[in-house]
Amino acid sequence: MMSLRARWRTVAVTAMTALAVMMFSTSPASAAVFGESTTWANEIEDNVPVRANGFMGEARADSGDLIQVWRGYDNPGMYISLDHGRPIRMAGETNASPQVVYMGGAQFVLFHTGTNGFIFYMVLTVNQANNGQRYLRFGNWQQVPNGAQTNNGRPVAVAALPHNNVALAFHGANSDELWSMTFYVPSNLWGDPSRVPGATSQSSPALAFSPANNLLLLAYRGLDNRVNVIRTYFPYANWFGRSILDGVQTDSEPAIAMAPAGWGQVAVRERGSGVLYLEDVQDTGGHGDWTREAIGFASAYGPRLIMDAFRAYLVVTNLNGYVQWKQSRQY
Image 1: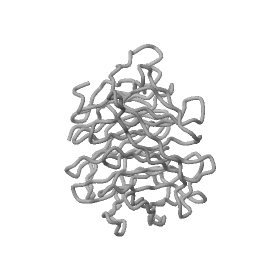
Image 2: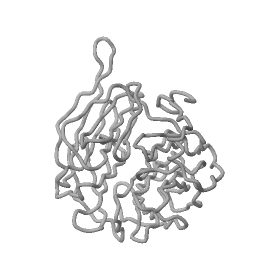
Image 3: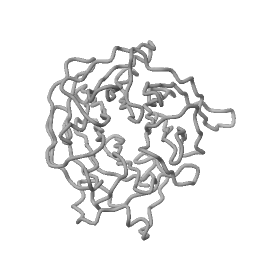
């Protein structure tokens, strides 16, 4: 693409065939926001376009290693790829999309929702063989303790925190309440789950950490289908500063990612049409207006946002199950 640092993917631009046209809305396209591309590319692993049932999760190490995880398109297996290499099917099954977060050094933490609704995690390490080839060393799946549980079809949300800690958020198992907790990775300790006050949803939440003001942001679909954003300082204080992003209703979980200077982006799938919409948000509470994705792209699931320094990237699964991506903002 533009450069290896600008984006870490193999570019395979989607051809505008009759099949691809089915993926887009017929409504007029809006003007692109600053830095937004109008071209989508397929996600490629081992020279093969990826198909998924749900969204793709990914995280990148300081060294450049890229981990990507997804649920099988036609099976409940979980797949992982290192640096766009051959996908490996991991142990276990899930009815929801897995997630991954970078922990510093050569370590990552994977999360998935078990078929029983309990949440599981695994620490894995990127190693290098004598011939220079990089490979994954897997740990064992462990259950998140302290009663953490969601519905078996719902993904969890994760975000990297300072000092190699991890924030976890999830939909309640027996209600529409949203919960959060912290994994203190260096000491291998979990905090207790705590309810996010006033946050109720019929979908999973999304998380992003903003280093500019040491704020953790949680975005979620309210019961009225509008996107809400609420925030807390880390180490955790009270949640505060709820923002309601009016103008677009959604029928799935939103996505959120924050750039280093305190501004970031929220993305949603519009209720009914599936068309993607984007909005700028500030970690301390400001926000812009919704803008329709530049060509009216329709997604089968809620989108994902990835922030690489000051560039935001949108990752979606199209209506035919193929995972695609593009740059969605420059800050």
